[in-house]
Structure formats: C-alpha cells, structure tokens
Length: 242
Ligand code: ADP
Ligand code: MG
Image (cartoon, rainbow, N blue to C red):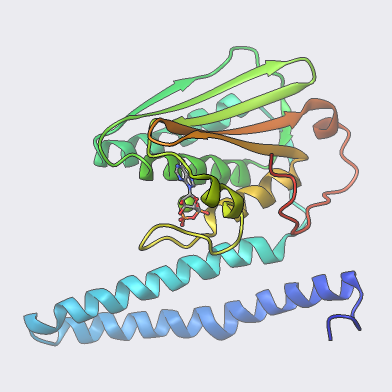
C-alpha cells in the first residue's frame, strides 16, 4: 500500500485517520471514563484502588492520543509577530506552580529588546512547557530550571536548562523518537511534538547534556527564515537534531 500512494496521499490519509481517531476512540473513552467515575461512587472503599488505576490509564491513553493528533494533523499554523519573551513570561506561572510542587527553583532570564519572530502562540507555549516539564522531571533531588533568551546576528535563541540527571549517549540517539520514554508514566511524545513545532517555525533544536550535571535544550530561530516564510514545511523527519 505504501508504495502505491504518493506522499501527499499518505499525508492526507494520516490526516483522515487522525480525524476518525477523534470520533472512534476519544469519544468512547470519554464515555468509559464517565461510567467508571459513576461506578466508583457506588462501590466500596476496597475497589477504589482499581478505579484509580483504570482512570490513570485512561488519562494516559488520552494524553497519547492528544499528542499523536497534534503531530498527525500537522496543519498549517497561524503565526503572528510576537516577542518570545512575552510568550515565556505568560507561561511562567504554570511552570512556577509545577516547580513549587516539586520543591524546585525556576529562573527566567529574558534578553531585553529581543527581535520579534513570527510565532504561533499556542504551539510555542506547548514547546516551552514540554521542555520545562522534562527539565523538572529530571531533577529528583532538588535543583534549578533556568529559562533564557538571547539574540545574536540573524538568530534568536531559547534555552531551557536543568541541573538534573542528564542524558546518556544511548538515550540521546532515541530522544526524538515517538514513544521513547524512560519514565514509568511517560508518553514519549513530548519531544516529538517539540520537534514538529520547531520545524514548523523553521527553527532547530539542539541538546547538550552531562550525566549527573544536567541538560540544556537550545531552540534556535533564524530571523530571516522566520520572516520570509513561504510555506510551513513541517514533515515528520527526525533528522535535524544536532
Ligand atoms: P516523556 O517525558 O513522556 O518521557 P519526552 O518525549 O518528553 O517523553 O522525553 C523522552 C525522554 O527523553 C524522557 O523519558 C527522558 O528519558 C529524556 N529526557 C527528555 N528531557 C530530558 C531532560 N531534560 N533530562 C533528562 N532526560 C530527558
Ligand atoms: Mg516529556
């Protein structure tokens, strides 16, 4: 089948499948969740642990479907001139709250007068959140998450740095593969979603890491490419990882 279909056909097939997944899987799951909730309210204390597991697993499956859909739909996205600093500042309270719950520190160092880029607000927030969450999740025994921006000729850079466990070379090779996770309740879709967002913004993403010292994710936007956009050439390739 694969050889018979052209690339465009295959892409639209994926888009159609994504749409049917919404109806055929997400909706029944919402119904199941509702009835499980009802059953939980009507049974004894002893069964509550089973219900908690059922709900957690349903929520996890739902997370996977949501991330998969945002990858698969891969539609042209609306962008507008925006300051990356404003977007990070707007999402900061969420990161701060997550960090407080874990007893960790967050620092935000925006470079003043950062050049504006053409950005999709929603997707940028998703990108920043995914990277920040990974950073926080990598710090089990305290530490700091540092977000920063800077610009240099032709480029704007966003850094998300943690003082966590670091990434081994073996993990590094699989980092952006869908469903690669080292967490018991991870989806392994956070970074593939990041990569897709980065590509849609004509940016690149690089990783620097030292075991036991921490990890820095660096997203680099080309100002020229951001401004002279012709088409959103996203695609599914996992190749532009430095
Ligand atoms: P998930 O967070 O659900 O596991 P991701 O795609 O976000 O999925 O990340 C994939 C894997 O990459 C993680 O399970 C983890 O092993 C590794 N990883 C990502 N970010 C970091 C980080 N900041 N520090 C250490 N490991 C990381
Ligand atoms: Mg993640």
